[in-house]
Image 1: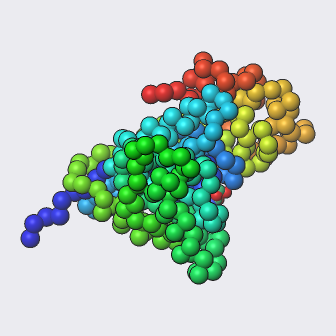
Image 2: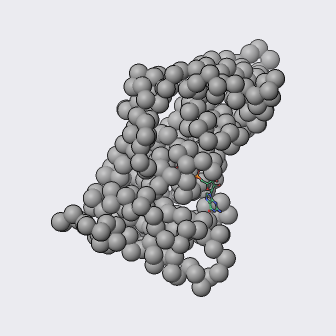
Length: 317
Ligand SMILES: Nc1nc2c(ncn2[C@@H]2O[C@H](COP(=O)(O)OP(=O)(O)OP(=O)(O)O)[C@@H](O)[C@H]2O)c(=O)[nH]1
Ligand SMILES: [Mg+2]
């Protein structure tokens, strides 16, 4: 019997902010690689996650939610996301099925996919929020119609393309519903190819980046309004001490003095809480005890300053 060929390729996860792209990546990889929060624009970089099967490998790229940018950081994030589309073998277009109709944000992302001419799988997420099965058909149909240029825009550009959906898949990333079926579909789209990453390598992100992201996630989850968007985190120091404890020193950057006060909290309570929650995730990641020290620093309007963006890790590769 002929041996089954090894299949591999790249798959980008795109959509407007907050639809559950990072939750989906984590469900595929079965571990927390990408941070998640209920605030839009949580993910700011391309997050690579490798999925392995005995005869296949899929390299998933989680991307920032595509949105109308108000800062240079937003422009950078959109560029990161849209630039993955032409590069990959399959695009997963994620939408939020708990909103029955697509919004302008979904139309905008669909247009970018159409322009690329790529085939895409339409992933309708958050279906756990739609209890009545009778409603499912209508919701899926509403999003499926985004393939049509006339649905995406009242005045479609001449030559605007129709998207070819490879499939339309209702899922719940949070409840792990229909994720295996979706993975089967993605693997089926892969051509014969090499094993791009060695087994056991789940991501290309440096440990320091993942740790900084875990800290940022806690701040996102614990703050409101402008604060979540104004925060960047950098791990500045990391050392293993003689007793085996890992010392991690991280800087939290905010845009204004008033924000610094909020992050620190009354008598340092907020910062302590952020540290305690982040420490748990970091200890799980490293498999060792850590000592986490957090510093808060102000960098005026960093989201609009090219040099600062670069220093804080938002640089084009
Ligand atoms: N009910 C429900 N909530 C979900 C599901 N998937 C994700 N969420 C929630 O939706 C919110 C956004 O999830 P993320 O995974 O951070 O979304 P994202 O698309 O990566 O967002 P950005 O990085 O900002 O673009 C979080 O509060 C998740 O818990 C789902 O299947 N069902
Ligand atoms: Mg995300």
